[in-house]
Image 1 (cartoon, rainbow, N blue to C red):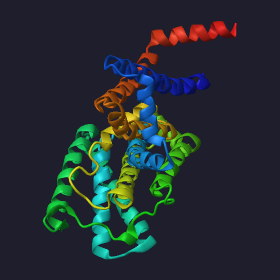
Image 2 (image 1 turned 120 degrees about the vertical axis):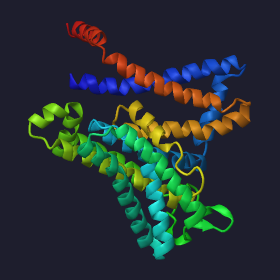
Image 3 (image 1 turned 180 degrees about the vertical axis):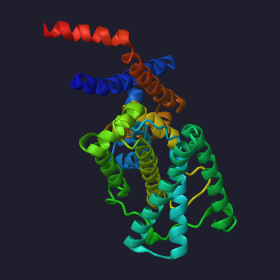
Image 4 (image 1 turned 45 degrees about the horizontal axis):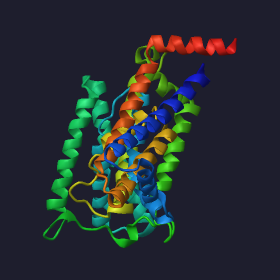
Length: 351
């Protein structure tokens, strides 16, 4: 039974992606273009060379962090929609640290990443505490905190750390930039941290007793409470841990790619992360894979537009269709009628 459920969790996203690409191909045909040639441009733009692949991974890096933020908290049954705010606050804390302390080199990078991680964890703890203490809806609180974080960042880059007449902060020192793997493959080492967290999150959730208890709270908090599990503690832990991941992601994005804060920093990453986590069935490793697929679509969209004059909105439609089909497929498989039908089919095959 468990193997069948695990197989279903893999099949649903795969089918969703394939169907979305088929639908996208139909749209491309309606535009009078060749879909095979179009997808050739799309994929060549995403990983047609080592440099293009590196650029795709750069795009995927923040999506992995925010996707892991959502998948980890959702496994505990809480809906942390504040990944974007936690991502931004991690970057804000890091820019303050590197510009005010003057610590440089590897110690400066590591300390700054740690500060961003802590700030993201504290920002993530706010909706958790309000949920536990006052019973407030964590979705509303976390969404509102996104706006507060974005407005505070705006205050920082227009006032506190403004670089002259330009509405942006000072750039971080060159010695605190996260180095790239190589000149031929210019992806910063932050991608290694993202991939490591994906595997570490999977191990924690599915191979440790604490992860089992956290998932048990997410499946049925009432049953977990009567079985002696500290439900409130796990709820708060899930907010703090997911906020720390998002804060680290914001700090990595600052030190590895953006190098300064300005308008639009971190915009959309939080809700993209939620969509990615849902498509991946809240599996941390699957989240990293889906984030890479989203990055392929975004990186290849510009090549598709220049090569075949197909608007980038077609890629946005494909991305939206993947989300719709994945969520709809998961919902359908949870219907009792569908479950009974699948059980009958598997029973006949065994006979």
